[in-house]
Image (cartoon, rainbow, N blue to C red; front, side, top):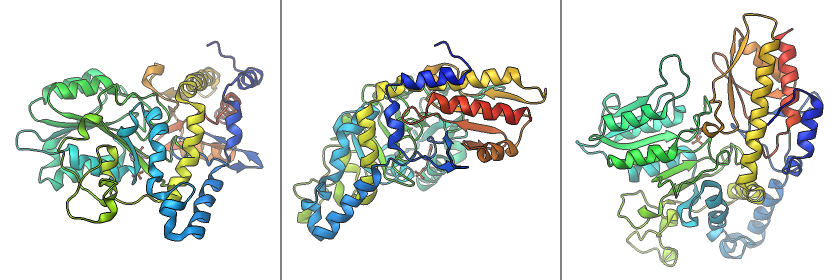
Length: 426
Ligand SMILES: *Cc1c(COP(=O)(O)O)cnc(C)c1O
């Protein structure tokens, strides 16, 4: 695409944007009396204007029916989670039976590891990315200890090479091969939260399987951001949260994927009544009889009020569709990249430099760009905020910007660039 650093160009792109009507479906925070330039949809997605109605409906049905709402509510609570199977399957590239909405992300990591991490004296190692999101690090460390192993001898972290920011696939594949006799599990993020690097899930999964290990993914930064094909890629399991790109609200319910081939297998698991055969669930009899789908990993009855927030957001996603979202994503993120590169040529202070550490190859990233602000500190973030930009700052000097295709515009990107340039040349 031929980009131009002008407001006119940005407005023209927005006019031709097939998704332009979606911006108005969300509430934007107001700063200085104006809609903020919101680039933190990778951290907490904006609230759909429809969410209130979805929630209100469940509160009304609860008031009207009491416990009978399990079956009499307009969306019966007994089967509420089933409404997500089709739309979520499309978002993550799965069969409807392979996805389920339940719990939250870190809880799901633990419940899935209970099934897929079964260390033995021979096979016990876990490969993960260095500097994974802290919650993932703690989950892996405590699982390893829970099974009586020493994390230092068990967890193999893959680092970027010296002087590089992102991890090379060949280095992950090499680590898998180097540990082939002792490897139990590869568990990494789909998209690294810090650098925005998208990992080559299909290749990594095939390599893990070739040495007899499972492959699982934390898709917190990938779901709703990347076109995934979890079923086709033969991924064993995955989980994600719903409050980042999926716009379902702070701490909302998470999602999980378990490949069809594991549904009938006798994997160990931690069960609960909501994973039990639906026909006999209310008979309250002895003996866990798991549903033959990802639903079998559910423990508790669904938190319907939170699920309603999720439903409001997923309905919007389903209507827009991943293909068109990803198409706009590449154009919009490419525009941000172009604007940042333009600014670099216009910075007057030689000590300042912006370096994008997210891969330049659009097949290795989603919508997030992580920008190292050389020579600058947290004050830059503060000034951006004061000027109406909500972006994320990671110490010591990384700005993470995620122009989200569902609700961000080319004009947002252009205006961000103008503000950033002014601050850098002040
Ligand atoms: C956001 C995020 C989490 C947060 O976990 P919760 O259990 O939802 O609080 C965990 N891991 C990754 C990679 C994340 O990006």
